[in-house]
Image 1 (cartoon, helix red, strand yellow):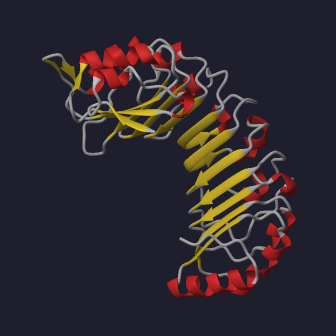
Image 2 (cartoon, helix red, strand yellow):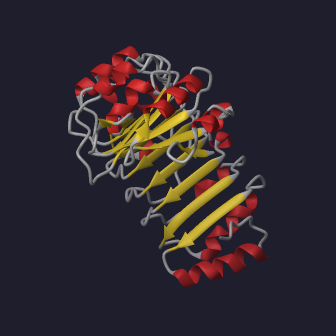
Image 3 (spheres, one colour):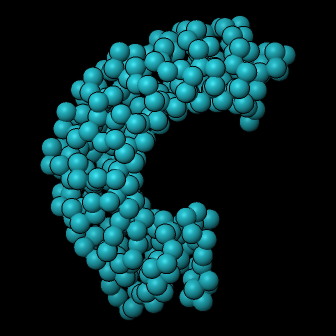
Length: 317
Protein backbone atom coordinates (compact mmCIF):
# COMPACT_ATOMS: atom_id res chain seq x y z
CA UNK A 1 0.00 0.00 0.00
CA UNK A 2 1.28 3.45 -0.95
CA UNK A 3 0.41 6.40 1.24
CA UNK A 4 1.10 9.91 0.00
CA UNK A 5 1.88 11.97 3.07
CA UNK A 6 0.81 15.15 1.29
CA UNK A 7 -2.73 13.93 0.74
CA UNK A 8 -3.72 12.58 4.13
CA UNK A 9 -4.66 14.38 7.32
CA UNK A 10 -2.82 14.01 10.61
CA UNK A 11 -5.62 11.95 12.15
CA UNK A 12 -5.32 9.53 9.19
CA UNK A 13 -1.58 9.20 9.78
CA UNK A 14 -2.31 8.19 13.36
CA UNK A 15 -4.44 5.28 12.08
CA UNK A 16 -1.80 3.87 9.75
CA UNK A 17 -0.86 0.29 10.59
CA UNK A 18 -0.11 -2.94 8.82
CA UNK A 19 3.53 -3.64 9.56
CA UNK A 20 5.99 -4.99 7.05
CA UNK A 21 4.00 -4.56 3.84
CA UNK A 22 3.26 -0.84 4.04
CA UNK A 23 5.18 1.76 2.06
CA UNK A 24 4.83 5.46 2.79
CA UNK A 25 5.90 7.74 -0.01
CA UNK A 26 7.01 11.25 0.91
CA UNK A 27 7.04 13.45 -2.15
CA UNK A 28 9.78 15.97 -1.61
CA UNK A 29 8.89 18.09 -4.64
CA UNK A 30 6.17 19.39 -2.37
CA UNK A 31 6.75 20.75 1.11
CA UNK A 32 5.51 18.62 4.00
CA UNK A 33 4.11 19.93 7.26
CA UNK A 34 6.50 19.27 10.12
CA UNK A 35 3.58 18.20 12.29
CA UNK A 36 2.82 15.38 9.86
CA UNK A 37 6.41 14.17 9.99
CA UNK A 38 6.43 14.23 13.79
CA UNK A 39 3.21 12.19 13.86
CA UNK A 40 4.62 9.75 11.33
CA UNK A 41 7.81 9.39 13.36
CA UNK A 42 5.77 8.36 16.39
CA UNK A 43 4.16 5.62 14.28
CA UNK A 44 7.59 4.52 13.06
CA UNK A 45 8.62 3.83 16.63
CA UNK A 46 6.27 0.83 16.49
CA UNK A 47 5.99 -0.02 12.78
CA UNK A 48 8.67 -1.04 10.27
CA UNK A 49 7.31 0.85 7.27
CA UNK A 50 9.45 1.44 4.21
CA UNK A 51 9.74 5.20 3.71
CA UNK A 52 10.42 6.27 0.13
CA UNK A 53 11.81 9.79 -0.17
CA UNK A 54 12.31 11.66 -3.43
CA UNK A 55 15.03 14.25 -2.97
CA UNK A 56 14.67 17.29 -5.20
CA UNK A 57 17.20 20.10 -5.57
CA UNK A 58 14.98 22.36 -3.49
CA UNK A 59 15.79 21.75 0.16
CA UNK A 60 13.91 24.17 2.36
CA UNK A 61 12.72 24.83 5.88
CA UNK A 62 10.05 27.51 5.87
CA UNK A 63 6.68 28.24 7.51
CA UNK A 64 6.51 24.97 9.44
CA UNK A 65 7.05 22.97 6.25
CA UNK A 66 10.14 21.18 4.98
CA UNK A 67 11.36 19.61 1.77
CA UNK A 68 14.42 17.75 0.56
CA UNK A 69 16.92 16.55 3.12
CA UNK A 70 15.25 18.65 5.81
CA UNK A 71 12.63 15.95 6.37
CA UNK A 72 15.13 13.60 7.99
CA UNK A 73 15.56 15.31 11.40
CA UNK A 74 11.88 14.51 11.94
CA UNK A 75 12.16 10.85 10.90
CA UNK A 76 14.62 9.58 13.50
CA UNK A 77 12.71 6.31 13.96
CA UNK A 78 12.74 5.21 10.33
CA UNK A 79 14.42 1.82 9.89
CA UNK A 80 13.70 1.19 6.20
CA UNK A 81 14.59 4.00 3.83
CA UNK A 82 14.57 4.38 0.06
CA UNK A 83 16.09 7.57 -1.38
CA UNK A 84 15.56 8.57 -4.99
CA UNK A 85 17.41 11.49 -6.56
CA UNK A 86 16.16 12.53 -10.00
CA UNK A 87 18.64 12.82 -12.87
CA UNK A 88 17.24 16.29 -13.47
CA UNK A 89 18.17 17.55 -10.02
CA UNK A 90 21.40 18.29 -8.19
CA UNK A 91 23.47 15.24 -7.32
CA UNK A 92 23.36 13.84 -3.83
CA UNK A 93 26.52 15.32 -2.30
CA UNK A 94 26.73 13.45 1.01
CA UNK A 95 24.85 11.31 3.51
CA UNK A 96 25.13 13.70 6.45
CA UNK A 97 21.34 13.83 6.74
CA UNK A 98 21.41 10.25 8.07
CA UNK A 99 22.95 11.49 11.34
CA UNK A 100 19.53 12.06 12.83
CA UNK A 101 18.35 8.48 12.17
CA UNK A 102 18.70 6.05 15.07
CA UNK A 103 18.88 2.76 13.23
CA UNK A 104 18.60 1.41 9.69
CA UNK A 105 18.11 -2.16 8.52
CA UNK A 106 17.20 -1.23 4.92
CA UNK A 107 18.80 1.44 2.72
CA UNK A 108 18.22 1.97 -0.99
CA UNK A 109 19.85 4.90 -2.81
CA UNK A 110 18.98 5.30 -6.49
CA UNK A 111 20.17 7.14 -9.57
CA UNK A 112 21.88 10.48 -9.04
CA UNK A 113 24.76 10.87 -6.59
CA UNK A 114 28.17 12.44 -6.96
CA UNK A 115 31.03 10.13 -7.85
CA UNK A 116 32.78 8.58 -4.83
CA UNK A 117 29.99 9.55 -2.45
CA UNK A 118 31.31 9.12 1.08
CA UNK A 119 29.68 6.38 3.15
CA UNK A 120 31.01 7.57 6.54
CA UNK A 121 27.53 7.89 8.04
CA UNK A 122 26.83 4.22 7.38
CA UNK A 123 29.27 3.10 10.07
CA UNK A 124 26.52 3.62 12.66
CA UNK A 125 24.27 1.07 10.90
CA UNK A 126 26.18 -2.24 11.10
CA UNK A 127 22.99 -4.33 11.03
CA UNK A 128 21.77 -3.18 7.62
CA UNK A 129 20.24 -6.24 5.97
CA UNK A 130 19.19 -4.71 2.64
CA UNK A 131 21.59 -2.36 0.82
CA UNK A 132 21.11 -1.06 -2.71
CA UNK A 133 23.32 1.63 -4.26
CA UNK A 134 22.45 2.14 -7.93
CA UNK A 135 24.32 5.36 -8.64
CA UNK A 136 27.97 4.63 -9.45
CA UNK A 137 30.33 1.71 -9.15
CA UNK A 138 31.76 1.15 -5.67
CA UNK A 139 35.23 2.45 -4.86
CA UNK A 140 37.62 0.88 -2.34
CA UNK A 141 36.47 3.06 0.54
CA UNK A 142 32.79 2.36 -0.10
CA UNK A 143 33.52 -1.36 -0.12
CA UNK A 144 35.05 -0.98 3.34
CA UNK A 145 31.73 0.19 4.77
CA UNK A 146 29.77 -2.57 3.04
CA UNK A 147 32.11 -5.10 4.61
CA UNK A 148 30.95 -3.82 8.01
CA UNK A 149 27.35 -4.90 7.36
CA UNK A 150 27.54 -8.10 9.37
CA UNK A 151 23.94 -9.19 8.73
CA UNK A 152 23.62 -8.18 5.07
CA UNK A 153 21.17 -10.37 3.14
CA UNK A 154 20.51 -8.31 -0.01
CA UNK A 155 23.11 -6.36 -2.02
CA UNK A 156 22.46 -4.46 -5.27
CA UNK A 157 25.15 -2.37 -7.02
CA UNK A 158 26.30 -1.38 -10.51
CA UNK A 159 29.86 -2.70 -10.24
CA UNK A 160 31.28 -5.15 -7.73
CA UNK A 161 34.89 -6.23 -7.26
CA UNK A 162 34.77 -9.48 -5.32
CA UNK A 163 38.41 -9.16 -4.34
CA UNK A 164 37.51 -6.11 -2.24
CA UNK A 165 34.49 -7.72 -0.63
CA UNK A 166 34.73 -9.77 2.52
CA UNK A 167 33.10 -13.18 2.31
CA UNK A 168 29.55 -13.01 3.62
CA UNK A 169 27.59 -16.16 4.41
CA UNK A 170 24.44 -14.18 5.22
CA UNK A 171 23.91 -12.72 1.73
CA UNK A 172 20.96 -14.43 0.08
CA UNK A 173 20.41 -12.14 -2.91
CA UNK A 174 22.90 -10.31 -5.15
CA UNK A 175 22.19 -7.92 -8.02
CA UNK A 176 25.01 -6.56 -10.18
CA UNK A 177 23.85 -4.29 -12.97
CA UNK A 178 27.02 -3.55 -14.95
CA UNK A 179 30.25 -5.32 -14.04
CA UNK A 180 31.29 -8.21 -11.80
CA UNK A 181 35.06 -8.16 -11.24
CA UNK A 182 37.03 -11.23 -10.13
CA UNK A 183 34.02 -13.55 -10.60
CA UNK A 184 36.15 -16.62 -9.84
CA UNK A 185 35.65 -15.70 -6.17
CA UNK A 186 31.85 -15.81 -6.44
CA UNK A 187 31.20 -19.09 -4.62
CA UNK A 188 33.80 -18.34 -1.95
CA UNK A 189 32.36 -14.90 -1.17
CA UNK A 190 28.68 -15.89 -1.28
CA UNK A 191 28.43 -19.52 -0.12
CA UNK A 192 24.71 -19.36 0.69
CA UNK A 193 23.39 -17.15 -2.08
CA UNK A 194 20.14 -18.31 -3.70
CA UNK A 195 18.91 -15.33 -5.74
CA UNK A 196 21.09 -13.77 -8.43
CA UNK A 197 20.55 -10.98 -10.96
CA UNK A 198 23.33 -10.10 -13.41
CA UNK A 199 22.85 -7.38 -16.01
CA UNK A 200 25.23 -6.28 -18.79
CA UNK A 201 28.11 -8.26 -17.25
CA UNK A 202 29.31 -9.28 -20.70
CA UNK A 203 32.95 -9.95 -19.79
CA UNK A 204 31.85 -12.70 -17.46
CA UNK A 205 32.29 -16.42 -18.11
CA UNK A 206 29.03 -17.40 -16.43
CA UNK A 207 29.38 -21.12 -17.05
CA UNK A 208 32.85 -21.29 -15.52
CA UNK A 209 32.58 -18.84 -12.62
CA UNK A 210 28.91 -18.73 -11.57
CA UNK A 211 26.97 -21.80 -12.73
CA UNK A 212 29.04 -24.08 -10.48
CA UNK A 213 27.54 -22.55 -7.34
CA UNK A 214 25.54 -25.31 -5.61
CA UNK A 215 22.80 -23.22 -3.97
CA UNK A 216 21.31 -21.05 -6.72
CA UNK A 217 17.50 -21.07 -6.84
CA UNK A 218 16.39 -17.99 -8.81
CA UNK A 219 18.57 -16.64 -11.64
CA UNK A 220 18.06 -13.62 -13.87
CA UNK A 221 20.54 -12.83 -16.67
CA UNK A 222 19.92 -9.61 -18.58
CA UNK A 223 21.51 -8.16 -21.70
CA UNK A 224 24.60 -10.36 -21.63
CA UNK A 225 25.78 -11.09 -25.15
CA UNK A 226 28.29 -13.65 -23.91
CA UNK A 227 25.50 -16.14 -23.13
CA UNK A 228 24.88 -18.53 -26.06
CA UNK A 229 23.04 -21.33 -24.29
CA UNK A 230 21.08 -21.98 -21.13
CA UNK A 231 23.85 -22.59 -18.58
CA UNK A 232 24.51 -26.03 -17.14
CA UNK A 233 24.20 -25.60 -13.37
CA UNK A 234 25.95 -27.67 -10.71
CA UNK A 235 22.70 -28.29 -8.85
CA UNK A 236 19.92 -27.87 -11.45
CA UNK A 237 17.33 -29.57 -9.23
CA UNK A 238 17.34 -26.58 -6.85
CA UNK A 239 16.49 -24.02 -9.51
CA UNK A 240 12.91 -22.74 -9.51
CA UNK A 241 13.05 -19.61 -11.65
CA UNK A 242 15.14 -18.62 -14.68
CA UNK A 243 14.87 -15.26 -16.45
CA UNK A 244 16.90 -14.74 -19.61
CA UNK A 245 16.11 -11.21 -20.75
CA UNK A 246 17.62 -9.55 -23.80
CA UNK A 247 20.15 -12.34 -24.48
CA UNK A 248 20.25 -11.81 -28.23
CA UNK A 249 22.88 -14.50 -28.85
CA UNK A 250 21.00 -17.26 -27.03
CA UNK A 251 20.80 -20.30 -29.32
CA UNK A 252 20.33 -23.45 -27.23
CA UNK A 253 17.88 -24.57 -24.54
CA UNK A 254 19.10 -28.13 -23.97
CA UNK A 255 20.30 -27.73 -20.37
CA UNK A 256 16.88 -26.49 -19.25
CA UNK A 257 15.60 -30.07 -19.07
CA UNK A 258 17.91 -30.80 -16.11
CA UNK A 259 15.96 -28.31 -13.98
CA UNK A 260 13.26 -30.74 -12.93
CA UNK A 261 11.87 -28.38 -10.26
CA UNK A 262 11.73 -25.30 -12.47
CA UNK A 263 8.48 -23.37 -11.93
CA UNK A 264 8.99 -20.12 -13.86
CA UNK A 265 10.80 -19.53 -17.16
CA UNK A 266 11.12 -16.14 -18.87
CA UNK A 267 12.99 -15.55 -22.13
CA UNK A 268 12.80 -12.37 -24.24
CA UNK A 269 14.34 -10.92 -27.41
CA UNK A 270 14.65 -14.37 -28.96
CA UNK A 271 16.36 -14.33 -32.37
CA UNK A 272 18.13 -17.65 -32.83
CA UNK A 273 15.79 -20.28 -31.40
CA UNK A 274 13.04 -21.99 -33.36
CA UNK A 275 9.58 -22.37 -31.89
CA UNK A 276 9.80 -26.15 -32.12
CA UNK A 277 12.82 -26.12 -29.80
CA UNK A 278 10.52 -25.25 -26.91
CA UNK A 279 8.85 -28.64 -27.12
CA UNK A 280 11.44 -29.93 -24.63
CA UNK A 281 9.70 -27.85 -21.96
CA UNK A 282 7.04 -30.55 -21.76
CA UNK A 283 9.61 -32.53 -19.75
CA UNK A 284 9.42 -29.94 -16.96
CA UNK A 285 6.46 -31.27 -15.00
CA UNK A 286 6.55 -28.51 -12.35
CA UNK A 287 6.64 -25.59 -14.77
CA UNK A 288 3.82 -23.19 -13.83
CA UNK A 289 4.55 -20.02 -15.78
CA UNK A 290 6.15 -19.48 -19.18
CA UNK A 291 6.83 -16.02 -20.62
CA UNK A 292 8.35 -16.09 -24.11
CA UNK A 293 8.95 -13.09 -26.39
CA UNK A 294 10.49 -13.33 -29.86
CA UNK A 295 12.21 -10.40 -31.54
CA UNK A 296 9.85 -10.77 -34.50
CA UNK A 297 6.34 -9.92 -33.32
CA UNK A 298 4.67 -12.36 -35.72
CA UNK A 299 6.41 -15.28 -34.03
CA UNK A 300 4.84 -14.42 -30.69
CA UNK A 301 1.36 -15.15 -32.01
CA UNK A 302 2.63 -18.34 -33.58
CA UNK A 303 4.29 -19.41 -30.32
CA UNK A 304 1.13 -18.74 -28.35
CA UNK A 305 -0.75 -21.21 -30.54
CA UNK A 306 2.12 -23.70 -30.26
CA UNK A 307 2.15 -23.45 -26.45
CA UNK A 308 -1.61 -23.93 -26.13
CA UNK A 309 -1.54 -26.90 -28.49
CA UNK A 310 1.23 -28.58 -26.48
CA UNK A 311 -0.14 -27.77 -23.03
CA UNK A 312 2.63 -25.38 -22.03
CA UNK A 313 1.71 -22.92 -19.24
CA UNK A 314 2.23 -19.78 -21.30
CA UNK A 315 1.67 -16.37 -19.75
CA UNK A 316 -0.60 -14.28 -22.00
CA UNK A 317 -0.70 -10.51 -21.52
